Each structure stands twice: as structure tokens, then as C-alpha cells.
Length: 222
Image 1 (cartoon, rainbow, N blue to C red):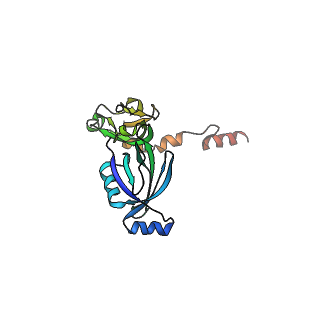
Image 2: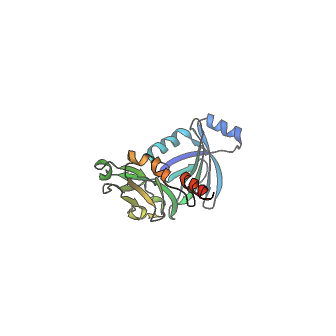
Image 3: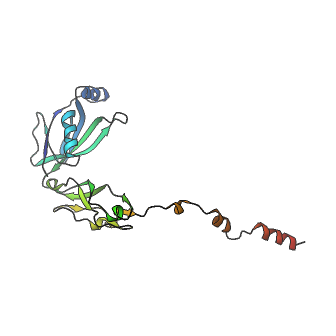
């Protein structure tokens, strides 16, 4: 996987007020930590970071440089956490984690479906994707953009599981092999949605009697 460069600057001031000033200046407050490196508070250029997310996604290794600091050898960062404003959806803070390019990392990558399922296009079934992300283990350079799942063989009532996925070379899937990724569900008919009151009325709980039976029992006791 290609590494994408991002230059950030140190951020000395902490607190809510300092974070707001950082955002007003076009930066996102962030922190970089992990792999035995001292934690560093940084200011991330919002425009460059937004472009990186739009074009390359959030699971790529980033070649991060902190201005005025020596970059660790054979290290990159992964986006560990990202907070958004609940109303504006603006990114308000980011966390990066240092990773060694020579050691395997654990992370989740998107699941992408490819092909057309005959169970949908020919038989009228409904495609139900259950798993949208899948945990993997691999070297940072081998992190895939996504795990692709071919659904072109799926017919009505069929499903694919994690065990059916062939991962890219150098990638180990960590999810339960029996976990369902996608299935083709049968359409719900009108009959399935209708209740049958006559059947419900005819079913009595154990020990219950009808009104007629109760009246007969009372009459026999006189």
C-alpha cells in the first residue's frame, strides 16, 4: 500500500479555548502516540487531511512529519480515532498511532461487494449485507483498501460467510469464519404479513377452556 504524506505542526497550548483557536486557523487539534514514542499534541491542516480522507480513506498508513521533530525510522501512523461535531459533521479532533512498517497491525477495513447476484436480478430476492467492516492482521504496507466479496454466484436463500473470503496475499482475516457477510433473503409476501385471527382464536393456552365448556361444567355441578 502506498503511504501518503502529511505534515503537521506542534501544538503547545491545550484546553478548549486553544482547540477552538486551532480550528479557526484552519487546523484540527490532534495527538500522536504509541509504539514507545512520546505523545505529541499537533495541529493538523484541515484541508489537506480532508483531501486525504476523501481520496484515500481512513485505513491507509500516513507518512507523518511533525515540523521541527525528527521522524522515527521505519514508522508511519494510522488514524486511530476521529471526532466530528454532531451537528455540522466537521472534524473536531484526530488521534494518530505510530506503527512500525516491519510489524503486523490489527485494524478493520471495509467490505466491498462486487458482481450481481442472480438471486436478486433473476429471482427477486433482497440483498442483505450483514458485515460492512472486517478485522484483519497484516504489515502496514499490505493494508488493503477493502476486502472484496464476489456475490455473482448467490441465489435466493444463499449466503456467504467469512470462511468463503479469499484475502489478499499477506492479509489474515481475524473474524469468526462462521460469521455471515451477505445473504439473499426471500421477499416477504402479503400472506406473511397478514395475521390470521381465526387461527389465533382457535388456539387455547394449556389449561384454558372455552365459554361453552365452562358453562357446561357449571351446569353439571347443580
